[in-house]
Amino acid sequence: MSTAIYPGSFDPITNGHVGIIRGGLVVFEKVVIAVLGNPRKDTLFSVEERIDMIRDSIDMSDGRVEVDSFDGLLVDYCRQKGARVVLRGLRAVADFEYELQMANMNRHLHPGVETVFIMANDAYFYVSSNLVKEAAKLGGEVSKLVPASVAPRLYAKLGR
Ligand code: ADP
Image (tube, rainbow, N blue to C red):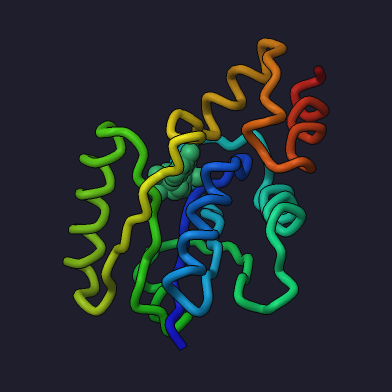
C-alpha cells in the first residue's frame, strides 16, 4: 500500500492543510497526518488538542487517513510506519527554500524516503496557522479559513 506521511505543527489545522490532505489522497492510498510532538516553537494547542481538531475536520470513515503524533527524526518515523513518501504543501516562494532544505536533509538522512509536494489551493494560498492565530487574537474573523470545529476552539483558547 502506498502511504504518505504528512508531518506538521497543525497549530491549528487550516483549510490549507485540508486541501493538501485531499490532494494526497488522490495520489496515495493512505495519508498519515503526523503532528509534531516536540516543536521548536511554543504551540497554542497541545498535541492532543491538535489531533482532536484534525479528527473533527477530516472524514476518516474509509480508513485512508490516520492521525498520529511523533517526536524525533521524521525519517525514523517514516521507517517505523513503513512509508517512503513525505507529503508537504507549497505556498508562496517563501516556503520553497525551507522546504528544499528539509527535503534534502531528509534525503541525506535516509535516501529511501522522498518528499512530494502539493501546490496550495489558490483560495488558501495566503493562509498559515500563525496568521490565523494572529488575526483571531486581534478579533479578526477567520472562520472561513479553518474547518468548522476549529474557529470556536480558537476563539475560546484566545479568550475571545
Ligand atoms: P510546519 O511547522 O512543519 O511548517 P505547518 O502545520 O505550518 O507545519 O505546515 C505543514 C505543511 O503544510 C507544510 O508543508 C506547509 O507548507 C503546508 N501548509 C500550511 N498551510 C498551507 C496552506 N494554506 N496551503 C498549502 N499548504 C500549506
